[in-house]
Length: 561
Image 1 (spheres, rainbow, N blue to C red):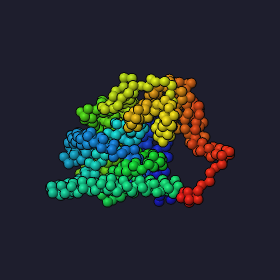
Image 2: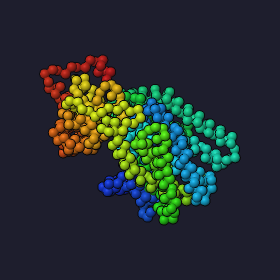
Image 3: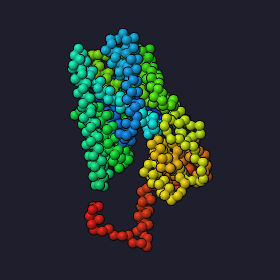
Image 4: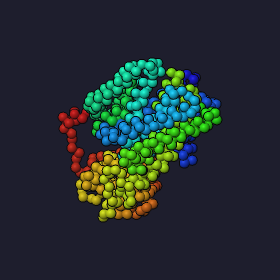
């Protein structure tokens, strides 16, 4: 019976094995991504036992790409994109050119033709959306300047791939017709321009308005559905009508939705699906890999992996440095590009269909992809830690990035420290400032910190789980620390670090239920507030107080029904 349900079986087996191997990888102090890839390899066609449907797995991974890019768009404004255009556009073009040249050299060394070598090099030049964004999010670098540059760089690569996927079939069928090539190229650029214009002119008005109308219904289910419908609908519609990539369409949908006041809620509602389908992406990559390439062509596989991991890193690092960014920021951007993924698979598949690439080339790209994806978290852990340790301009001796507005570590009187500047942190800090309470905010979003400093408020850039960041925020002088971040696991790590450094400091955290309360109190929190409990208590107190609850005006009641 199961063979009649390839979607269900592939998804179920893939997720179960990904959980098992991801958990084991985490216990072995490896990235869970290694476990997800191992799960895919186990259910792939090149290992014995159950074989998942690779076509189904690939489509599931495409959903992951769409949702992940949609989530990035929710955190990335058009202003942010324009702010990094001077480094992202020339950097991406030059880096892709250099990486393509390196890959072409490898192809010629392996006695392939020029066309096959060029396509092989192009496949090695473009980074994976999922791998880069997952690494940036895991290291909390997505909202830093380095993260913005990396994402802008990725968007430029995405646009280049849109053009390449149109031009390659024309070259394969009619390579001797320059007019046909120029015509297709111009038509592609026009389609992309029309799509972007529609999103910026029409979408910017319609999407926030639609979200507000759905939110007015009071149905959380409908709101979540509207978020997913907009993200998926725009991505698929863009691919169907304008032939742009799913990822690019989803990114613009998220970026336009960010204009809505409900963007934070939209991001939270779509997060679980983004995580689940991102896992399926890595499982699908593992399924594509023929492990026998390690035995049949080990030297060629090693050289291919070196081009991806070392060659691209060196080139990108040099380009960002030339543009007068610091060594540390350049390193983070470069390492984020030191892998390949979904677009590389599309290119080699296209090359196989048009008989441009030999099977060996396809296997080398897939093998290089899985090795680079496995190595990338290790490189990113080192680069991200190096970046954080020296980047934070608030730390003594810290490196000042470009035009960052640096201030010294807090050294004032007793104060309250607020960790996190989301909806809860913003409201708490604003109230304390209005009451004249000295308050220092700790946030890892560079734009937030810069804006607070411009308003004359004390703010420290960094991750509060790090001792140096807490000390820079004046932990020794803090009477109370309010941990206002949403994720209880990260909050627990921060609470534990605060109590280790300053056991007598009062710590108040937020949770979502009894489990979070027990967990955070076990780690040292003096008090844990749960939003729904506090609202319920206030409602009951209001009812039982001497002051009667005012009755709603009939007109107001009708308006809110």
